[in-house]
Length: 124
Image (cartoon, rainbow, N blue to C red; front, side):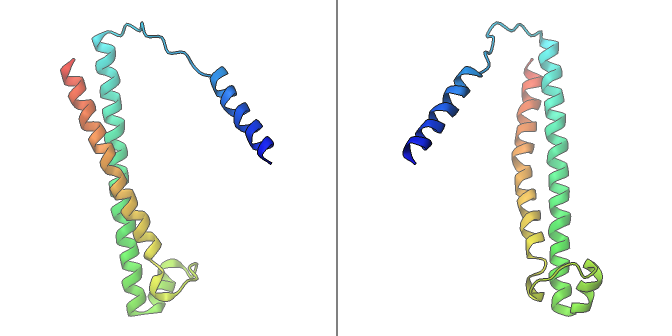
């Protein structure tokens, strides 16, 4: 078992070394190319951040609505989810709250990255 694991480990890392990419250090980019690169990167990061923030808030609110509907009447949840959820009635919307909160929190690094790229494009 140790021999097999060691052999696979050695083959994996030797393959990575052989297949690695060489980055040329003599790339001459004009300031316009760098400006365009950072502008595009900033725009993509900001769009991603807003989509994740909006989607996260919507999913979190839907989870809260499902939980409140469950507490008031199980019939409302069945109508809202078309009867597709089979869980304990008091915990049906919890996963939506967790996923929505995670998406909302995950949008923060994209906003930070967009801000850094905006600063870089103004420094050129």
